[in-house]
Length: 281
Length: 281
Image (cartoon, rainbow over all chains, first blue to last red; front, side):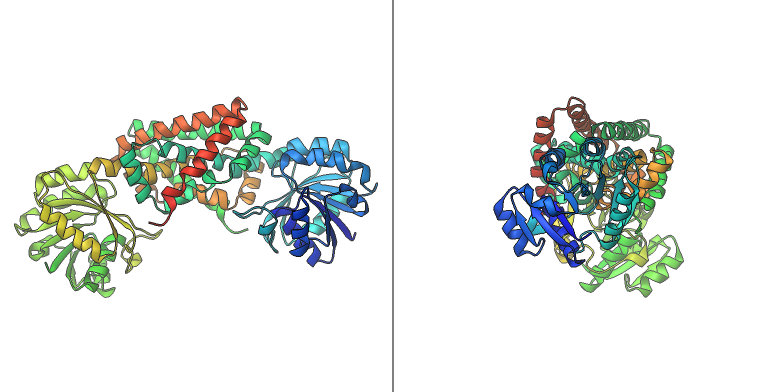
């Protein structure tokens, strides 16, 4: 395999292009905007770029790197041009709503999720080694050809990412907990803190330090991304939110009842439970 | 004023001693443990140290740096030794339950809260410039002599801290929002994430990255400190938790009803509301 197509030249598509070209692949880029195509070539993220999907007709492998809601429609549009043996993958942060329809459209599809990012977006933010040491999840179906998984495994190794293979459902449940739930928890914190009266609000803003900074970070992030997560991973996120609300209610009740022994036990548990989530892999 | 006493030689007491000695003050330290006294002298945090409260009889000013629950009892114990004109202050992170009883015991009392810390505790963690650019809140009462506030203001300037003056109640409401609420929000996140089944929990632990790391940080911190916050700032924390739960319920409802326009509007508001809390002062 030598020629790789990338549709969607943003942070993820652009960064994939930089690393894949460095590995010797020829990369063809497609973006909706000519200016993004030009910039991607200038930055070295792709060898060629165009707004025309038919340019992907020579690609042996295709990465769909558009926003979540455009992935299946883009696959539909590009189908007439694909080589029969072409492998297609995507990079969406939610897998269940993508994998079944994409596989129905194209048998040689395997869902993927490279879990890396920066606060910046767009082709200007693209960088080499973005995926280095980051998780890369593949979500094959029972009928996915094993060669696809083998080829994707090699690519993931080229990116020096940490490979995980699981079902789309397991992926979505896991990211609901560790990625989508924190956004809603953190946004609710900011929303509730703005409810103080003017003078105390101003004091709170002045006194806030690293604890508030860290806990509120992802809740103050990109609103469109937050809505996408909720929209495309709704049922897993709802389950996570219900568990979260129950945990919060336990804390509220312990404080109301002044049951300090129970609160101490709970905080000891959370202190002990955190390291496996945050230790270097 | 030349001679300052510090009771409680931990991170805060020790760091205050280092900075105040560097400003030319003579610092007398008192700790319950002789080994802590010896170490504080070795580290240069105090000029002399002893387990005997009577040593504070020559101090013109006294910092109470014990854990919250020991501050008023310590003041009661040291009263017989204090010079009549001695000024007393404390460093507790909650002010309402301290200021009234402490002022009743000693008229020359003014509550204070230097808002700095590290992940480490104890005299070994003491460091110079810990309070540099950090907020230092003073909470005088209407009948607090103005000279006390003036003298404390000078000391706060010596530490290069940012001075705020407000009522104990306003302080406690503000820190409930930006410091104590985040701990409970963050602990609930960890508690709820451990509810996944074994395989998905393991995957979630492997995939967790900076979003989970930041949002869970303060919920995985010192359990005793978390209980102290809840115990001594209970009513302000309860009010903050009620507002938080209402904000969370709004998010849950928006997702349940698939009201993506409302969720987008809320996330735009939280994105816009965060900077005043986290921008450099």
